[in-house]
Length: 397
Image (cartoon, rainbow, N blue to C red; front, side, top):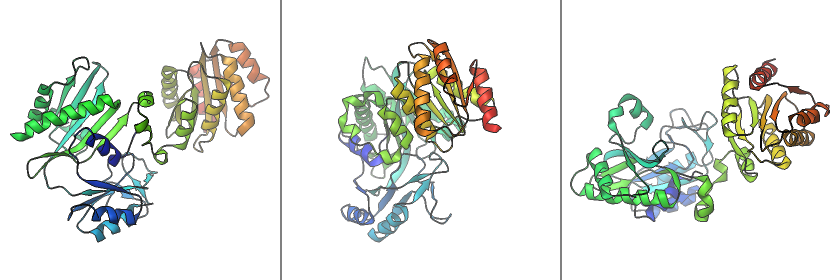
């Protein structure tokens, strides 16, 4: 689960992390009032969407030479003008894709005098089972470009959760970021506070880009991106309350109601599979034969007929879908349940695109019989390779 920048900063502030003063705004009037409440005279007007690259992004409804989704303002009047430009318009960045995201809220932040821009992030290193700090002196840039062009400028420090955070980690981070004097002590505290927030709130990613050194020599978090482990949200109702469903795909929201693992993609072939590994293999083989998957959808090992029906409805609700591939290997999941779920969904929403079904495993013959006797125009497949070729051919033909 993702949250907005201003929400992330509020969470971090509770842990003693230094952030600039700021006010969220949903209207132009609120943006003006927020600016008047800040010290000024420099303000930053920030579009709040769940995507990076906002500053370099472009608004669909504005001229091509218009400024991006993060703008400086030297007066309250400029804040109002920027807010009017941004609110209700669609911001397109490298991370949003061509469709972009509508800006429904802003963050009006007090300006900062920046001496240096640094990069700091925390994530779970699954290879070692440790929490990793990834830092670089090249803040404010695309970290992917830094990793590609100058990998020697990226440093990683790991913390064993069993041992917990120790001050030497903060000192190592400070030395890697070439901090000096009192900044080293600030960094030790900052890194410790961030680690505590990361662990206690069950974050999966905490990215600060940039972490700045102000002209008076202090560290400050200028931007913050936070993702949370969805499996741990039951422990954090205060975080769940921050969820902004307008930033999420409606199909993914619907899937979450049925505990389906669903991620919308950009292709044309809808997939319903049981098991994450089999689902990934299905996506790969569709790509191999020249088409692209429209989604990742794992119905799980113990899905009910109702759950399968819901999954099928979600797939067919996607206007990009030109064909559907159902690929089930029945273990705990029985093939006849899948068959009945598919039939129930087809009866409810109709079938306007080709459907290929590959069933194998528990009750496979019964499942095939149910589909065969349904009278539906379903293309049967013997194995995954056969299924992928048939659905790609059906979509192209």
